[in-house]
Length: 213
Image (cartoon, rainbow, N blue to C red; front, side):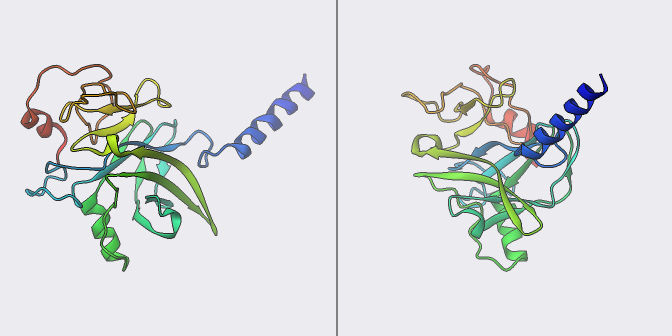
């Protein structure tokens, strides 16, 4: 029995070491939802700006809080050009939204060109990296195509099946097959992606009042 226990313990350590999840093993930060082509005032500053109103949301799908100070956002240019560096802690199940205006402020504070999140409307890659010592590890990424980057469509994970991506297209309905599939749901920056089927009728003002800062 003791030998079996030792074997299982060693196996658990090996699985933890081989896992791509950030330490501790129970923690995992993922890209959860994003808008690449904003046509509304998503960041709530009173103006609509193609650069400042882009947004990317991350989520802690693990079971313990995670220190975000080592995490960085990037686009297809990869880790040579980071667009945003996080700070603070993210609790289990919680989300964090980064707007283009946040990215621009971070770039300015760190002496980088002021591009914001720089999500191309013709398609791009949203990437999340983690810095550890001298290493830069890709934690999560999602490559999207042009159809996913049309006005105010967000792309995000299903809350009940995080490996499945869907399109939140209530503000710009898909008239043809979307990739990923459209849902008729509203984008939800700062909230869990609980709408998985067509949303009930609601005004943009009502939706905006829920989560705009």
